[in-house]
Length: 394
Image (cartoon, rainbow, N blue to C red; front, side):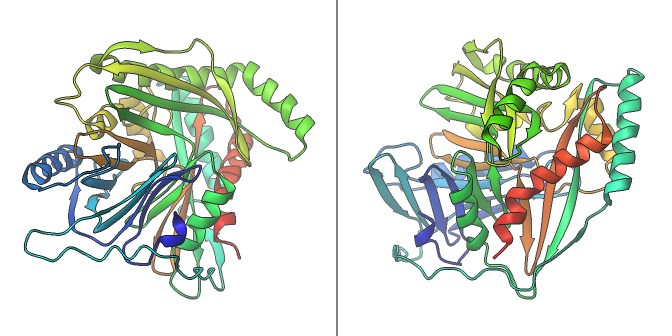
């Protein structure tokens, strides 16, 4: 799929070789502030109503499709919803091409062909972002003290890392490496925001809704026997189970008003990724308001979950804005796609970076609870930088 992607405003949403890629811009909305989701939902409804669509495939992701990336916080940060000129999709043994053009313009040439291999970044250097490791550990310690004092139960704190190359980045290079190295994650790129997220905020497809919740992390060693022992330790860790329970509860509470029935497993499973292992739970439900509530609106209802904000969420997000020391931008915000019916998939922009020209800003975050140790959280954040950092390397 990535082999056919050109440099013209590429978008991607891929997992295990399936999903969607696209390029060009047929229509686009930029918005910001507390109404960013409502603005995007309204614009999409109006765009769909005006569109003349011929869809001979009738699969989720065919016909008119938009891709979006949304800011984590109400302020600051911008959000984007874009309709590519060309979309290539694959599901199982079916593949399709969709072309989109304004009514007064010719249909674009799909031009689906194998492209040249993108060049790797040249002269790459890394530097601390808003806070170095010592200062960030002080922020974690401050959060632990506030939690111990009863101000809140959990807060997710993030940090950034700056990568600078000698020439502008061709984002297709890290996308290819992320898709190959993390096939069980969703490899994404929309308007400069890219990564390989292990966390599916919400999928809505033909009346069914799914959300994959991750919270509780341990770093892998590369020794299979040792990692199995660590996985067992993670599954029994009271600190990680507590953090995970908060996240699952927040997702279930947000989805419940939209579902006629739900399945919330009592215990998590351990998700094994190349660099880390997570406690994971898949929450499933049957939606009863699909005619009026799109997958994007479900994503809005779920954002921010305790997995990226904290518990209670209002108190946690307010604390993030006060002590984290950086602007998250679209890090940990919803990213994904939606079709004309409102079905779609929205992940959380984790294991991610934002690229602009020759600069990439990498992000990593950790859930902090009463038992958190600042040095351990710093090590966890370093592990979470690995996917994008390694993907940028030659």
